[in-house]
Amino acid sequence: MKIKKILVANRGEIAIRVFKTAKKLGIKTVAVYSTADRNAPHVQMADEAVCIGEPPSNQSYLLGDKIIKVAQELGVDAIHPGYGFLSENANFSQKVDDASLIFIGPKPFAIKTMGSKLAAKEAVKKYKIPMVPGIDKAVLDPKEAIEIAKEIGFPILIKASAGGGGKGMRIVEKESELKSQMERAISEATSAFGDGSVFIEKYIESPRHIEIQILADSHGNVVHLFERECSIQRRHQKVVEEAPSAILTEAIRTKMGEAAVNVAKSCNYLGAGTVEFLMDAQMNFYFLEMNTRLQVEHPVTEWITGLDLVEEQIKIAQGEALSFSQSDLQIKGHAIELRVYAEDSLNDFMPSIGTLSTYKPPSGKNIRVDDGFKEGMEIPIYYDPMLSKLITYGKTRDEAIVKMIEAIDNYQVEGIETTLAFGKYVCQHAAFQSGQFDTHFVKDYYTPEVIHKHYNKEAEIAAKIALKMYIEERHLLKIPKHKSRAAIKNLFHK
Ligand code: ADP
Ligand code: ADP
Ligand code: MG
Image 1 (spheres, protein in one colour):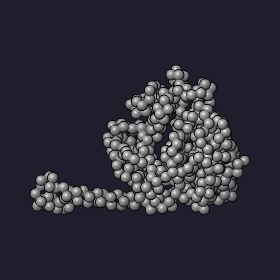
Image 2 (image 1 turned 60 degrees about the vertical axis):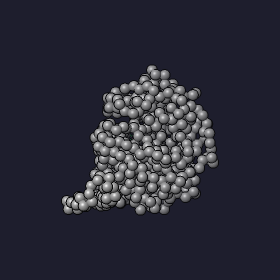
Image 3 (image 1 turned 120 degrees about the vertical axis):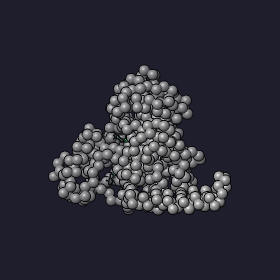
Image 4 (image 1 turned 180 degrees about the vertical axis):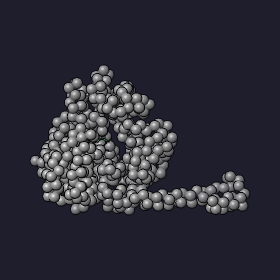
């Protein structure tokens, strides 16, 4: 069935991202929004828009039944869930199905299986996918946990089976800390995910996060679209991503790709999905989890493969077969994404709220900005603090890095703190440039002292440039030479 009208059960940049492709394909669009987003760009961009409730997401963007009702009333064919909110809610996808609407994503069984990290490990077992050493069932008894931890060897990681977005994880260095950390993890998981199941994994010491994008259609075809490296993280959540990874060999890429395709097969996957792996210093890789939705960082894959992932999702959802096979796919060039969060990267990445008094994103060749805000808007406190995604491209990794630095320099944001300067710091760092880094980049290199030194140096350079320009152009101001000399002297005596 051809989809003629799509409702996006989401907000911000991802709603806009989906609308863009829908428009390209001649599909009508419906936005839903909370009262906090009344004037948001995603609402203005859609052909129709319906207010579904108050700002807190459990009174708006998480109201599945209400969203389905809106879809039925407006004659919608399909619902796209974006990421976050209802995107990994098997119940919701079932209800969409039951309402004779198309859910743009996998079937409830796949969402449910992969939504539980423990069920996921169970499902992929028969495909011999390498797994992080640990246990594959929930533990409740601290005594049992200690036995397991001793066997695996400290440090270990306690993880919430239902966890996501980097939440619900606790590192335990030694036996004496295990009981209290476990209690905390259980209570955190219960309040955040409504499921207190936790399990134990070996804490991989210098891991890189490398994930594989897959696409599966309803005709049995499954392909992978290569890897994304997402090791630059804070709080176990990604900030900088790139494709391809700077370190993968063709042989490992093929192996990881095959493993990811098998993970997708293990749950009868349908649509776009991501299989996440950890890679240790010896380049062994281990299955981490599968995200059964479009990923935040999908643009880097789009750039190196030339595909529109939302278009592929829509085609698959309407029953079409993939129009290419694995051997048709090729990596072309290099792409980097920076998540521009409304956060103060000089103050432990704490959320920075306020009004976007200045907002001028960069543009130009090899620069893409996916955003959902406009100048003058307030950043609502109710949702994810991501302001935009800045993506750059180059024929080589070095070119993409240079482009990213240039784009950051041309990105003007005032009124709130952002991760833009952090992104520049990363791009200018020797470890990142050489490709030799892991998930501890922030802990290892981004200490407040180093950063302040870095910024002071930048301020000094900026002042020197300004002075040089002033000297060169002072004739335009018609200031007599001796006077401007006195003015400069003054400047330095202050
Ligand atoms: P990605 O997995 O696409 O790389 P994130 O981990 O940052 O990106 O998740 C994207 C968004 O989805 C964030 O807003 C995050 O808080 C949210 N999210 C991810 N997993 C879950 C989950 N299991 N429950 C609730 N929110 C989640
Ligand atoms: P989420 O569902 O929150 O995305 P993941 O299992 O994907 O949880 O892990 C998120 C991040 O946490 C990883 O990218 C990695 O940085 C870290 N992490 C997870 N498991 C381990 C582990 N066993 N050892 C070391 N780091 C880990
Ligand atoms: Mg993850």
